[in-house]
Image (cartoon, rainbow, N blue to C red):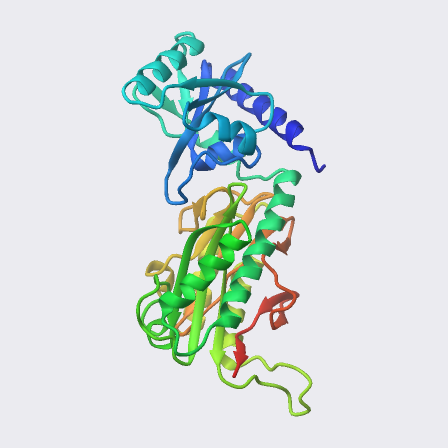
Length: 375
């Protein structure tokens, strides 16, 4: 069901009030950028894409729902960010008045009962793990927004890589990518770039002054509505490869090896499987590819959503994969990597960051990106 925003917010308020009953608490207090976006169906409480908490909070009791913010932010947030049945509690922006007034108000509306929080302060309790896991299963309205974010992120990556030249520095490509993301209304959570030389040494790395040379690898995470879409794409600076008749792109050996390894992990992504099963599948695939122990020396991704990742895949991450979860893995081999953000639907994975204009090939029934080769 593709709910309107107001119905989605009402659903989440009911969900949080269920937590209050379950935990015998007086209020749920959400400070983080991730949880604020979740509770408000995509609003942002921060000017800064690197901050963990923003200038506004959500506070929910059994009979009220508040946005806690300050006088410097209230007008803009009311007009441009937050919709729904919220009561606004606005305090002076100056410290210590802001802190003292807000803490007094929270204690008052909680009625002396415990306060559950994503980032608990003094005398507050952390949200239990089971409650944190509930947000990993995305509503259809969230999934619809996620598809939009994924398409915009993929478009930004393609735009930046098609502009790139072999004499660009990695920083220049990163700047082009960040610009492409912002022009599409996405925050650049991270932009990683490696040229031909550094990609052989590092699996994933922030950009440096090094020249791209013969190859560029771009990995990005773009955020909108609080949702994080991650992908990576590669470009080779040289003539495009075609079949002998000139009809179609040929998958080179590096792409073939990389995508075969990735397919093992994606095949393990089924509802009912533990996230650790994907990790162990990758471990086995790396060993078969002659790269043993790679999962222990390089992060591999995991469950995505309002954080990237929400839960990182590991040998003992026994969280069960469920329909409606988003997944993004970034396996890598020397000189090659691949990543897209997928939505899990039973044994099917729907690629949120697929770009139909990017060269691709079908691997294990899935269309996967190839290295773009342009002169």
